[in-house]
Amino acid sequence: MSTTRIDRRFAALKAEGRAALVTFTMAGDPDYDSALSILKALPAAGADVIELGMPFTDPMADGPAIQAAGLRALKAGQDMARTLALIRDFRRGDDATPIVLMGYYNPIYVYGPERFLADAKSAGVDGLIVVDLPPEEDAELCLPALNAGLNFIRLATPTTDDRRLPAVLKNTSGFVYYVSITGITGAAAPDPAKVKDAVARIKRHTELPICVGFGVRTAEQARAIAQAGDGVVVGSALVDAVRQSLDADDKATKATVASVTALVHALADGVRGAAKTKAE
Figure (spheres, rainbow, N blue to C red):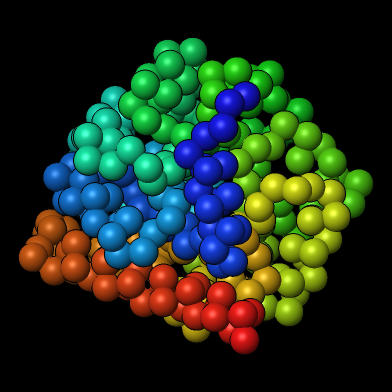
């Protein structure tokens, strides 16, 4: 497949000598316009790659924060068509920042996989993370996505051993998402020493960048993880920042966008601080 925005972004960051900050927010949370404003503000705040959640009623790998965000979005009328529209609206002002759609297969299946891939590509999506499609089901979506020019990003976990890893990596592209803890999103903080060992082990099997997520909430944690991996993924903390900014009726306030961007600024400083530490 041809080079994607994801490939170009990680090549540029490698040349800079630093890790990526990968941010996750939920499409349509708490409403379409607020979600679009957040999306547009993320790159200037320091996000290098954007993961955008596809709202779903049964997100089995996600903790309470992301579950609640998805339900808020669904209540506000978000669906797959509006999620793709959100990306098209974002692309009118930003043609450089990579966007990865993350979620579960059911909404894609309901939309129609072939139609979804065509519409996602034309909207400006660069990659997919579909957490409930294992390598054994690559013919279902992974291979068609690669043929459509979209990166298909796979998850590796602490329980993915050296026998399983080649199957996980076989058709993976863009980057590998290393889940740093066992359990749901936002449940615990990762151990930097264990993450470093795990990233080193995965790198023996692939030349793809390794991005580390689940449990990173602060600039200090981001800095520590950035010293071990090629990217740091932050989701639950940003989704929590949205929730804490809402009024009693779960509606956006003047603080909603600012609360997210302030945290992204701090996380980006942490990630960039890791690069300075390496240089020293």
